Length: 196
Ligand code: SF4
Image 1 (cartoon, protein in one colour):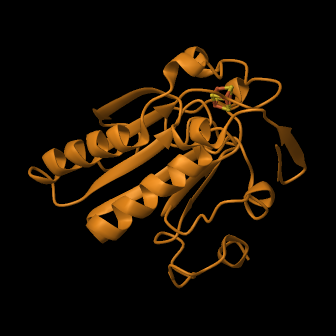
Image 2 (spheres, protein in one colour):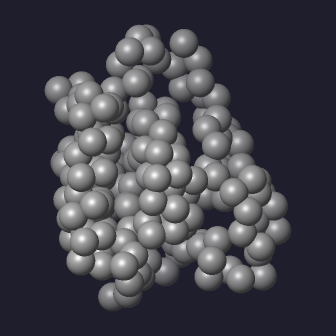
């Protein structure tokens, strides 16, 4: 099976069943994966950046190790349960997609479906944020809708540009459909329209 995204073409021999069930390293509840909200954070397993970023904080998530495959329905139920627990305490929380690379071909469909379900269920009580090494020009050509991601942190981690703030390295682009208030938020907005 061939997948094309941006300038990349991927080949996989995996079944659709495998692609329906993502690779997930861990799901955590913590502060620090969103600029100001507590989050439920899904760390996907597998990173398709090449070469890898020197100084990557999560090298244990690099391999597309199928032993990390998790049933999608179980993952979604776990995420929703953790969000509901957080929402008992906070008026607004985040759902963070990290890794690894949440937008790798292996995991992107699951990331999209989780974001869609959560936004439709909780609306803006939950802000979704995705961390990706991909840049805007890659995302405009990606083969999943990005409509249900509210915020993006784009670009590789570069150790020499590390900063003690957010994002982790100064080259990375943080984009929020809300913070960039010159952009009128619309669920149907195309990403390339948002970045103009
Ligand atoms: S893209 Fe992310 S997970 Fe992959 S090497 Fe870079 S920092 Fe690490």
